[in-house]
Image 1 (cartoon, rainbow, N blue to C red):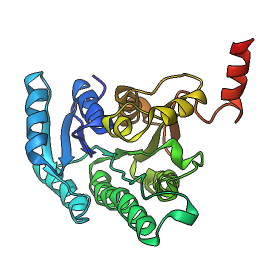
Image 2 (cartoon, helix red, strand yellow):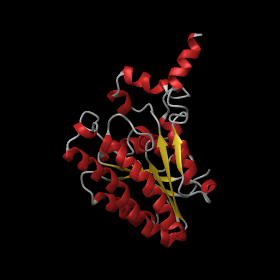
Image 3 (cartoon, one colour):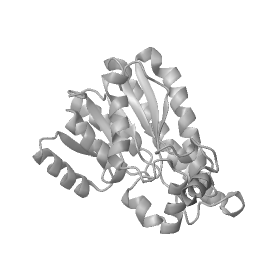
Length: 265
């Protein structure tokens, strides 16, 4: 098993990509800590996974309380004596308020930037101090293709994801001397509850029209990339920005129109 004996902490871990990452890491032999605000739900999930042979625990983290991004790290280290892998999966935006430049309020922009960036910065800063003492580690930032390819809205969310991509590279350079790696995974449209509950069918179809592999990604496919970066298979890989998006943003901007035209012939 690729993560046998490693101590892994995953934020925003009770559903979606975070939960898929917890499951994938546990399957590969890791001792996984779920960082969650709803500890009752986290306990229920952990109990289910442990009944299936996993080794899953949980710690408290509330994105509205920035001190918990460091206390969750300290709690894991206190219990395990180390932390080997940190998966920064938390990220938020309200698509009804996070619009374009002209129509997004200053408060919405600043608040979104603040909570998304500090979640990665504070947790990573706390983790590297311990990783450096135990021979190294791996930080995996779950970003988004929205931080690489500009959208017609969500200016705050896209800005934070672009910043996280660059923070990933900076962290990789700064911490390499301690054998700490840092990489980012950029999901495209992924079939999580959050995505499916907030997108109209028309928007989904329009997005997938420009995705060469014409479907939404699965949370498990995003988690698989995270497991690779967490494992020793990626021991010489750092500072990488990996898109897992079915080819979105890869082709010519008129890709979808050209495909439709060809299909009509």
